[in-house]
Image (cartoon, rainbow, N blue to C red; front, top):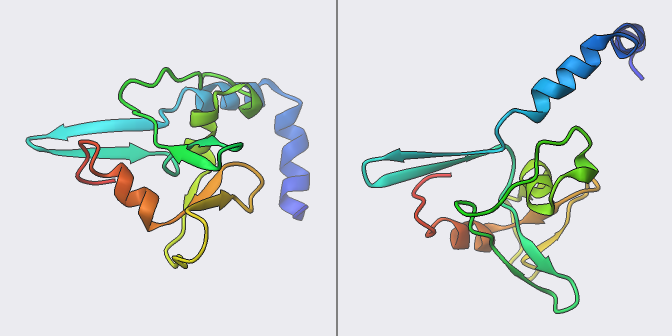
Length: 129
């Protein structure tokens, strides 16, 4: 742990600052749709979520305009899977088309995805992401 963190963390973890910070953080939006004339913009905190059927090795992209989010949780494990993925999924710029369409994220949660999933997501009424 960097020396600065070793000095700061005990001060904030033992006081109500940490609880206040996590309460503010949990209320930040994960997604925002901006409707501008005919060009809609989707702003995500992180990456495009993927509903994965691990047994069939298939996936589908959820309709984020109708999804019922359960993301008002402090502990990420208590969030719904789509909210977790919006936080942790990551695009990959250099994607080998011989690879899988997506695979588990190296950060330990969520998935890495390439251009195919990005292009499937955009036509769903969204011009910019």
